[in-house]
Structure formats: C-alpha cells, structure tokens
Length: 396
Image 1 (tube, rainbow, N blue to C red):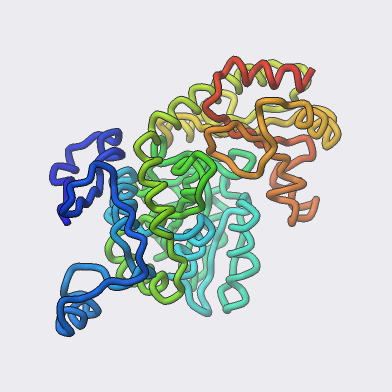
Image 2 (image 1 turned 135 degrees about the vertical axis):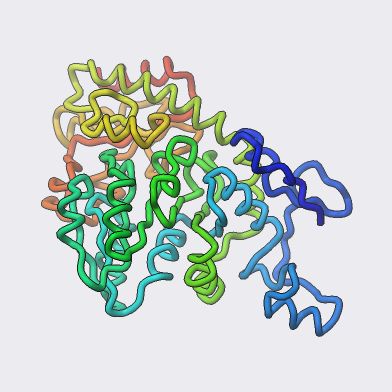
C-alpha cells in the first residue's frame, strides 16, 4: 500500500481532512478502502514472528490495528496536531483508556466535578474499585486544583467546555499545576472540537474525543479517539488497548474517514448558526440564562478568547418555569428533535437533569448548575432562521 500524504506537514486542516493518512491498494481506488477482516496472513513464519516483535511493519489482527482504522487515526492526528492517535469503539472507551491505562492501585486522580455523567462514573465510582482514589474540584478554581494534589496524584482530568453547562477551564494553567506535581493532564475536547481548541498545544498530555459527535456528526456510528505522544502510547495506551480490546470496527472507521472530509464545513456552519441562535435567546423574555462560549456574556469569556479560536455548536439555555417550562418548550419544538446525542447534522435538544445527568442527586445537579429549567441545545445544519422560528414558537 502507498502512503499518499508525503507533504502533510504543510497542509491546512481542510486539506488534511480530505487526504491525510490515505493508503491506496494496488487498485488505486479514489475513496478510502474498507478492510473488513479479522486477521492477516504472512509470507512466512519468520515474518509472523517479526510482526509480533514489531520488527516488521504491517498488520497482525484487527483488534490491534487495521488499515482502515489506521487511516482514520492518522487523519485525526493531523487534525489535532498530535504525534499519534488511537481509535476506540466509543467515546467512553476513549476516556476510560486515557485515564485507566496510566493509573494503578494506590494512585490518585484529580478531576473537575462538572463532567458528563459517564465520565464522572469512571473517576468517582469505577476507579476506586481498583484502589485508585479521586478528588473532585471546581474546575474553574485553580486553588482547588492545587489543594487537591497529593504525593500519589498521577492524573488530572476535565472537559472544557463542560457538558452541559459550558463552563470553561483554563487548560494551560491546570496543565502547569499538573506538571509541577508530576501528573498528566487528560482533556475531553468534544464540545470545543479540534477545529477550535488544541489542548496539546496548551499543555495537555492526552486528548480524548467521542467521535460519535461532530466527527461522524451525522447520527450513524459510535466511535472514540485518544491522542497523545509516542511515549504515552508505548508506555501505557497501546498495551491497554491491545489487551482489553475496545476496538473501533473497520466499517465505523470508514464512515468516520468520509465524515472528516466535511468536518470543518459542518462545524463552521453549525457554529455560525449557534452564535445567531444564542444571541436570539439572550433577549427572549421566557429565557432565564444563556451560556455560549462565543458570547461576551459567557462567565469565562476571557479564557474562551485566549484558548478557543471559535465558539461552539452547543448552547446551554435555562428557560423560565423550571422543569414544567422546559418540558413545555421542548414538546412544542418541530424542527429541533429531542435526543441525548449532540454534534449532529440535525439540531437536538436535551433536558440534562432527567436524562444525561439524571444519575446525580438533585444536590449535585444544583452544585453543577444543572437546574430543572436547563436545556442543552446542539445546533445542526438547518438554516439558522428556521431554527430561531422553531424556538420562538416553542417558547411563545
């Protein structure tokens, strides 16, 4: 197979998203090939031995690596500006691998308390079962990060902007605190996307994505990605993925590859629409609060401007009337659909306190700002004026 991306270091992201990582077979296909195979054959027993010793380049078994998955990983690494990437079956598999691959019994994790429900489960419930303790902090408060550090702290973890309240954490500042203590920083970058935020450039050690969201972005496949340097891959991540098997299927990798060709177009259009919709909602009499990273009214607008080059496709909007007000508005929507997914071509709305964050107690939800009137809006590719009209009639 032939590697087509010899000049990839000079490419702009739009070009890398079309051509990056391409491997063509002897047939010279235009579109990337889908290698739906479990295993691979060898020319000799000596070659098989060399493959397993990593002395001969090539593929062994699709749980370890696969040509289609490898193309997706290379393209994601180019987009992120990361040395290497590894794909997983889901976003939660990516987060789990990024954190647990490097943690052992007796280690300590410091994590922001504002996390997606499943992410918080990993650090708060699952890790302690294996002797890995955890301290939760307000991610916006640097003093809390410093105070939480112990001699055995190995991992810092947060998402920014957060799900669903769109809080923003100062990545560079938290990375500095982590590295001063010998810990690594893992950042979940889903809400910002690689188009608008580069955690590795800001000091993070590992970045995780749910590729299900903007990367596929069309409601078809599950997937995840972990991005890091070669040392982290070789020391921790590769053996963890190889032995535990949270593998992305070749079909899903092929879908993701094709989706990346339109990634920047889709996310740019969605963000442009989200900014217009956020501005409309901010002036609506039925709306209590709007939180949008691209708005000057955002509580951490200065940090947004410093570490993000664009807003987001996501809006947090609290409507008046609590749960009843939120449900009434959601149930009147026509174009915007009710779903717990996000980053899709279709605009989607979620009531976090009864869905994605329902496992938390009401006390915890209030602490996180997830009030009963809060809605999470994922803006899609529909015309912004149609979405505003839909919201206007629903709120009215």
